[in-house]
Length: 110
Image 1 (cartoon, rainbow, N blue to C red):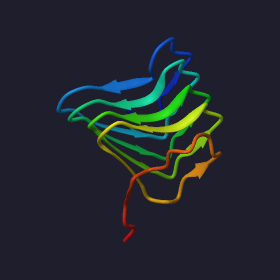
Image 2: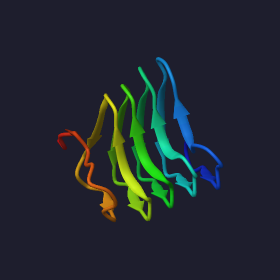
Image 3: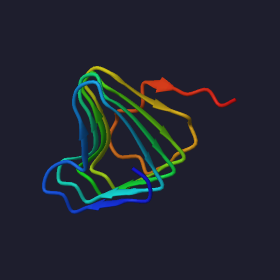
């Protein structure tokens, strides 16, 4: 998903379930009443150079993996929800802190 705007969803912005792999780059996911990026069991998301803004929850995983780098993560009610799985961060995101949950994995820059 490249240079795409997904806004004003009554549910989730993007949801993956099962053995799927998504790359989201240079995109906007905003104003979802549910989760902006939602990784179900077996799903892998890579979100790079994108804005995940004004969602109920920015990123959520339930036994999936999400890798985030160079993203703007602002004005969400909660930034991260982890129920199994891992949210990896490269540490170079711009984040307005919302909620106490933080990514539980890291990406090494080389």
